[in-house]
Image (cartoon, helix red, strand yellow):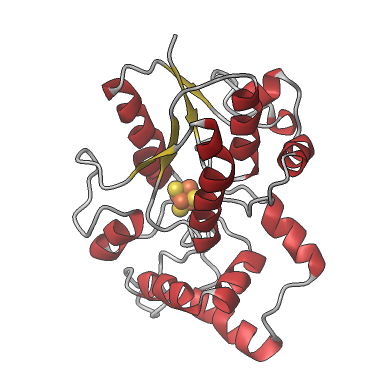
Length: 246
Ligand code: SF4
């Protein structure tokens, strides 16, 4: 049986890679790149690969710009959204399905890999019960994942996910605005480019409830302060918006 690690560069999949590699597992570690992950995630991926994987003869296979992806505005999710004037879906998560699940699934088919190992922690055991979940099998919780990473002398990654993800919490949008104003601006411009109602309100906000636009948030951040409290950081580190199980 051939296996790959479905890798998102977040806490769970980093811990899973460490755990398996320390047990002697050697195989492809595959990262499906939407092209709009937070910069901190790309940074961590390079750091983890350089500091921990490379010395063990391992590396990360990055999937982006693949010929099967239905992209016209570039090989990225954000390029697709900008060209089509759509935002990542909050109902059927076509963004996850196309840019992550299908990307890795088709790569696996092409490379005759029949099994994907996904980083679901024991405290989320209800998620994707039909998949192979080494962390659940070993009863390792999210805190256990953090302990594994820290025990290797590594920094703990920020949660992974797209910086245009509609499932981000306000603390994340606020942090994006504060740390990466250019990316916040791009997300706001994307939202503004989506179809509008007669009243002028955008119908496809990057808010699943459809109530708050990024310009609303920006106004609030600019006039009420934008720095995160310590408790918000906990939320930022813990939050997992994506259903792909990566
Ligand atoms: S992180 Fe959000 S925007 Fe990105 S693929 Fe997952 S659900 Fe879609």
